[in-house]
Image (cartoon, rainbow, N blue to C red; front, side, top):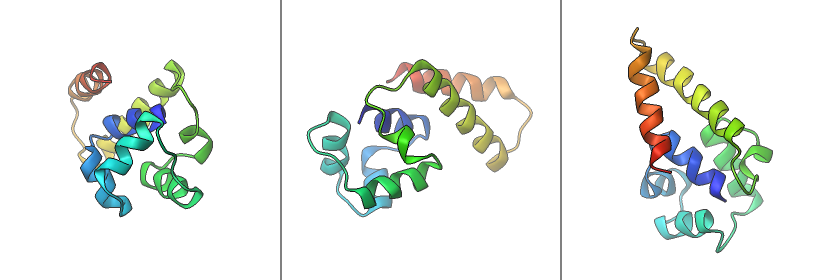
Length: 102
């Protein structure tokens, strides 16, 4: 589930943080991201809820450039609602740095 890794990084979560939110361990998240194992339907729904996306987006094998762009846009909007500031360049730089780390 490479899309999971993209989502997690865009949202700034570590594997450990996401695991804690879902009630699993860090190794489980790592296995999902590497495609060694897959989350259950219940866990997929929890992931979709956590990241405010649909389950079909989460189930894409390869995150497309359009998906990454859309997710980045959504993430920036959510960030601006949580921490309203006028410097959008700061958000854009942060997103670019997160995407480079993928």
